[in-house]
Image (cartoon, rainbow, N blue to C red):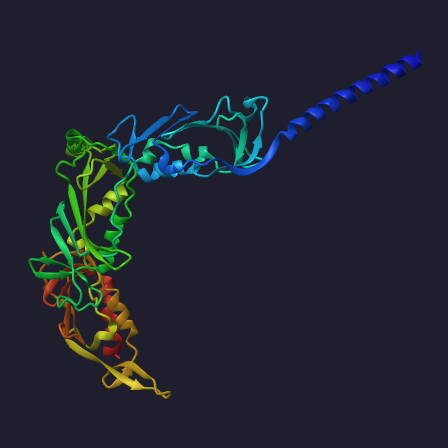
Length: 474
């Protein structure tokens, strides 16, 4: 009995060993069917492809055909970005596989019966179908089939490129990459133009190159502010389109039939050979008229408007209209002369000052600039007061800190608190006069060369007076 049991046990072990051997053998046979490939399985010249379409597992289907350029089959009015389509097609120009699985037993194993993406390509001579299956995280490659009976592991994943939306294939308008502008014209919210001019006689600041004409003559603008505004236009994100074939009704609804603001930038573009071409960029800005009407009604009823205002831009006569954020709208709308002019009261370089006459409480003290040679033979610039060399950094610092808080000409200077006359090494402006008058406990009225600029913080004026009094009062 014991021998029989022992025999049966040995037979059971032998049977298990045979099964294991058969499984291992089958695995080895299957393993032998997986071979390294490292070769191109498709080589389709991009220019030969006349039709392309693809289906995604989320239900998205996109298809295009080539005429003079690429055309979206569902809507010929859609402005297709030819370069974007060409980039998609280039995946198959030299489409290589790292591994090939010959005569696979079950394509479902590789996700090819329920693919994530199926791509169809047509040339004059042939049609191709590329089916994208499971992504192998271990190999960082995707299983694909091309209809030849094999399964391939490919390192260049087609799904990564073709998993896209139609909105990413639109030929968006471009903004100018201009570093400077020859002219910027505003109409609508603001109505004026600024122009570029080097070595202008209308300024005593070397960095001033942008100017506008006002009732009081030519006004220099702050170059930093103008370039920042130009950068706002150049860095616009034109991608969130609401229409690619805008209608007259849409233009009216979005405030673009008569734009709230139109900005025209004239600039010069230079190619690699140094050839210059005059360019013009027009940006129209509008706001949702229905939403604005709701806000106006709420304001009239002294109620809080809970909604938001949608903002739009359109490049020239383009058929595409985009939405922009509120912060971008605010930056574009901040284009008044006072938004772009100098807030610093004094813009000359300190090196250009040759003397300063400062009058406080009717007493004038004079600082003169001189050059001395130190013990090492180096030339140094110093200021003197009553013949004595004095450090005036505190005065210069307080001068540079003096800024306009509010531009206005509708104030009447009466009680003077400070007067300064600057002698400059400047052919066009040999002298600059600054006056500060009492306005209230917070502000002083600033007058430059006899013209009212606006209001500056009293604390800034007091800091300048205190710096002067340090020398005046000893």
